[in-house]
Image (cartoon, rainbow, N blue to C red; front, side, top):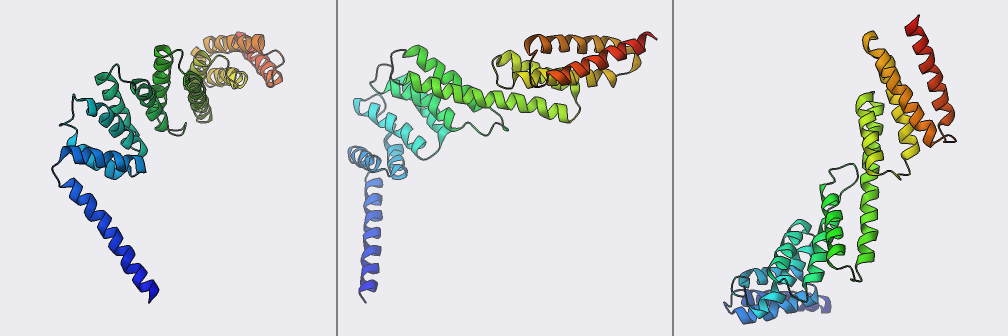
Amino acid sequence: MRFYLYTILLFSLLCSCKSNFEQIRLSNNPQKILEESIKYYEKGDYLKAQTLMELILNQYRGTREGEELFFKYAYTHYKLGNYALAATYFTNFSATFTYSPYTEESDFMIAYSSYKQSPSYRLDQTPSVDAINGFQDFANKYPDSDRVSECNELIDELREKLELKAYQQGILYFNLKQYSAAVTAFTNLLTEFPESKHAEHARFLILKSAYDYAINSVYEKREIRLKEASLRYKEYITRNPGGKHAKQAREINQLIEEEFKNLIQ
């Protein structure tokens, strides 16, 4: 019996809360809606806060109260996981309220909202690039901000993801025996990330790809492609004379020299 009464009371309370929200939503009282939306926001009920805020955004555009309202409205999208919209509204806020005390945080959240959209390295990395650019812009704009160190850490994290994607792209082309594409992919990796932890392996696979590309070429193109493979060997062994793949690289170079001899005969 007590459980039954408790259930009824709980249901009544929930209905009461809902009806209270509906009364506010339908009140047509911008000041009341503003006050209650902030209360919902501060309680962490971002969906209700957002719903109410959307009713009054136009009324408070260009007003003193509108500054906080638009900033927190952008945050409701972020808190609800709508990161693309959050980035858009933080961008709009920063452009509108240039000298607001919230502008620095808003500028940071533009980049951080892109960071939250950064997917697995296997997928398109446009959000990662946007986030990197955003964090760099923030650090340039606010060099004395406490957030600069965090920006640098997040940039390093994102660049590591881009580096891994570039490396795996080269591996994919190599495994598919698309040797020319593999050489291009690994070369791009080394250009963009010269200090990559994958650099030694990438240089070896450039050599291996160039060699495999040469020996699988038609006779007329084999000589020039073997010369290219020989150059790739020199690049590898100059930079990695004691590298993990140095022994294999020397063996490939011997094969290249033998192929040259066969061409001359």
